[in-house]
Length: 185
Image 1: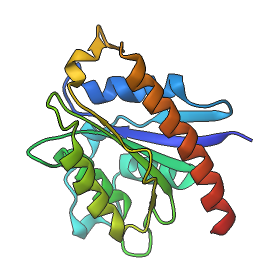
Image 2 (image 1 turned 45 degrees about the vertical axis):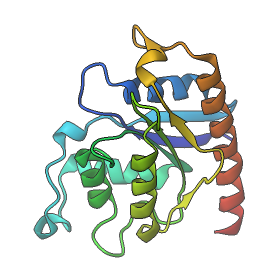
Image 3 (image 1 turned 180 degrees about the horizontal axis):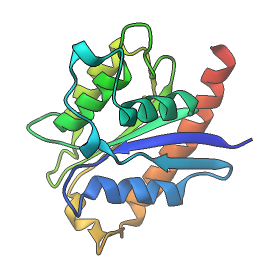
């Protein structure tokens, strides 16, 4: 049986470190695990509750991919001690209208990164706070926060073996976590 993970995040920047990490996660995924990256956030309008019952097609697609996945992987940079606005916007769309929360009971893992020494930890904790209401099952350990990410990525590829090992380990734990959650839900 293949475990299907929907991955998203990054930034709109052409050479986004987070997008590189998403691609690396696809390569590092455990056997029998498939990570599909959703990257159409520039097409998603700002959330408007007036339209939540009739969302745009791209939002419907995003929600459907989350619902059909076994787990979720979010990779985020840190912007002003938090996550990029488009990630929060996408989460708002995918969790609405009330009663149609795509994230309900989903196992979820987070990778954060920054060019500073805290590795996006404030963004990760802020995101975890928002996920409480969504009734997800975040993987608590291992935490993957990647400091000085600009020194660990060269020419669009992750070059730091320790970071790759940490991501691979987290993905293995996410697969185990999703199998465990599936048995209880």
